[in-house]
Image 1 (cartoon, helix red, strand yellow):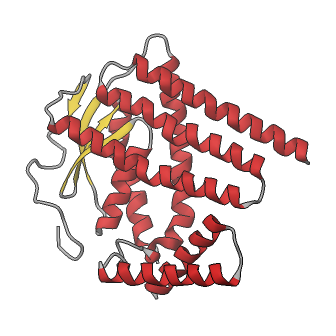
Image 2: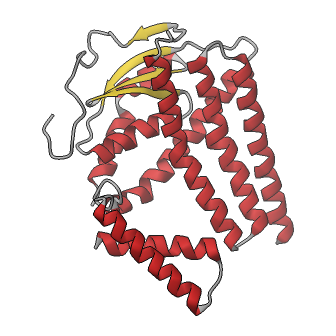
Image 3: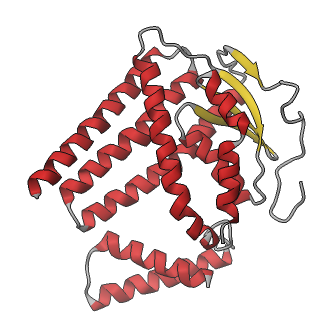
Length: 124
Length: 157
């Protein structure tokens, strides 16, 4: 039984490491800041996720596993916020993304210059 | 009701982090949790945005679905990265979010960002500006499948 858990956790840790290395490689290969962020999000989702699940299998049903779970939840909830803040800051700073196609002005898309942020209970 | 749920969540969090089960320390944990709930209430951080208990049932099916989406797109992005030709086609697009609450809108925007290959770069009202690594990712989002899934998640009671 311990052997099965060990093997499973080794596989998970190796798979997580693979995605982290792949994300790092992507960071080097991608052409601009936005495309690099896509590579980085592989690290923070599947890379960190598989690594942590592998660690949890090693720790067993203990408080350490609970703490690893908290850390995973922290990464899961703060990661997209940080990525979004970075992307928005880059856009605001006037960095033009390297694009193959700009579909933000397509005719069937949402209208430009919509109203400000919606609050709960407001229409629209 | 929401306060009780927040208290239980905070106390369990405290308990898991401390790992000591002596009467004095347990009482200290209860006291800390009560104070934290009191302060959260004064800051009105315990409303349906700060502690959305109404979404709990929805998360049971939404999170597994989201995790599977993340795994699929992670694999797709990894294949792009290791491809020697680096066949990316970065695309900027704008999509409309149909969620009714700010929690739902934030969930949708964060789900887009969390899925590798798409990033929410700006939010203006209910229109999201999304940067996608490949053209197909942008077209997928414009189709609105994920938007509908999040709206459905938001409406589960």
